[in-house]
Length: 542
Image (cartoon, rainbow, N blue to C red):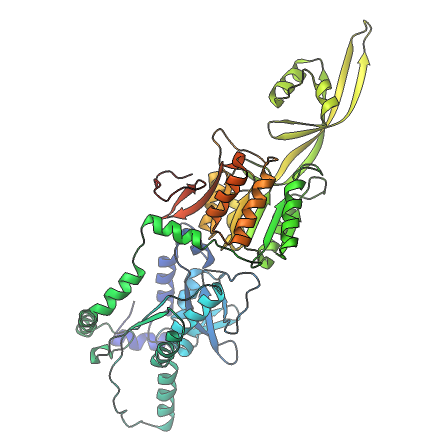
């Protein structure tokens, strides 16, 4: 990409920059494209990996300020005295170009997106280590910092400055050196981080005259000198490199699971609970929700409840739109789904229609057999119970009409209101609500399709607690009230992690021992049973 000699002169004449900006942008766009053409920064988070930001300098604001292109969102309601301007919605290639928009070298003025303009992040933040610490505190305010590793690009021994051509040239050089200085941040971190108990700080930055080269250097000899200086530095600082490797080494599978579960510990009133329920009729599911409300009120734990009852008329997509709003405002540590589910996902909303079934008839016989009713006829069932479920569709008895023919034979026509699934929360829609699941413990009272569990965990959920029974999905059962009461007591009052709380709840209500704690380990989903030791088979994924 970089040019030299006459080509540099021609490029500067034509484009008012040392190198061809359009060539640079084309190459960056090619490298940034993936399966999703031109992904945004937040799109990259779906594939896993760490939270990442790169720094640019926003010059369309006065004064110019650092701007973070990042692949994460902040926890809802989080605030920080050090919050920086930034976004996760820009295209990936745009952030790369904005961060590298060095005046003279690539851009005469700035990299622009509509009315916004950016230049090289070095103008305001050439060493982003302190900013990384600030972002970590905003993302995880309750976590201590164990280790900070800062990687420099090399420095050289200070020397006397050559006499300036003019005062303007001197001022330019001094201002540029001051803006791009990296050592002041290093000195601040090396002073302040030791004040944090347990925090360790490492700075890798060779000081060598061979590091004194231009940012667009293409001379093989000069680049080889830089490589040699780096290799010599690695050998000289082997002890420090070994120490960092020891701290950041890959943990074994059991350690990773343990770390994940320790991360699910909640104590006291911190975080609270968000309950999402979608009953098919007024009395359904209410017992468990009422018990949870009473528990949270008694312990002064914040609780919000979103009711998507079938008795509450809702338009298609309305519940999902509401969830999107919740994603921006919720600060709950636990999201609890008191909903039904089937192979397609969690059912958030229902629609109603009417059907009639005549008895006696072959249709009535088939209807009764598919319902699993213990009664001999639809008439007997309706006299005993108001509801009957057939293949996941609830039929509520609403009336009967009897006809007598000429020979005295009676035919009864039973009128039912049907409650049919309308809106689902599945793997696809969950990925659209990416920020809602990050850092949350998710509890479901219905067994879930594996695609939905995967979507939540890949989006950053700490774990998913849900039933797991052979033979298909299990929906909400009455004994779950005691189970959930014990689970939340262990989680919030005792301070147990999620799987320990699940195990304690299974002791209180053994009938619910089919619950599992799902965690993400090395890209695979592991379903832990109550009281399970961590000598599991990683191939046993859901």
